[in-house]
Image (cartoon, rainbow, N blue to C red; front, side, top):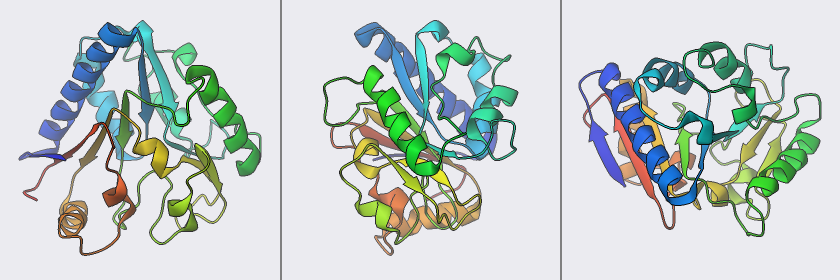
Length: 230
């Protein structure tokens, strides 16, 4: 675990995007593509602000979603819709770089179809190995759509799982499972505000079993960037 604290949220954004730049260039040099998973929430604004300033081979990016709400892309809750609105046009990424879910299906069918899409990019493996996953954390310690004490935390058979009882609306979503997160080459959490940093302190003290604290890549690194002293 690598922890970096900064004085301002702008510095967190800069550090986040510098790490993305480094991972992307290493991945393209070593494997020819950069396979990245994005999350929603505040990360959309962070990346829309910071990514236009990095140097990378954008045409080598393949962008997936660590979780997604099963709503139309035009809906304000759609993560893909948010990136389409806020990031596309600021950087040379367009629809062909993204691998979204099918929002017209049930959560169960959308999860199955997304697994099929992933297997075209990660053939012949037990778990996909992403170059980088960008993760958020809620004030309850959830990450992706993996919530505290939810049965999905024990899911170890599928890459993408449906959830229809999300405690945070909207209730229907699809999410990467913990084995997928922990098989990545790198994960980055970028958190701001005292409330979330306090959750991180509890994670470090093992004071509670927060889902975000279960993200510990087996052969990769997890980076925590924050705007308060941990």
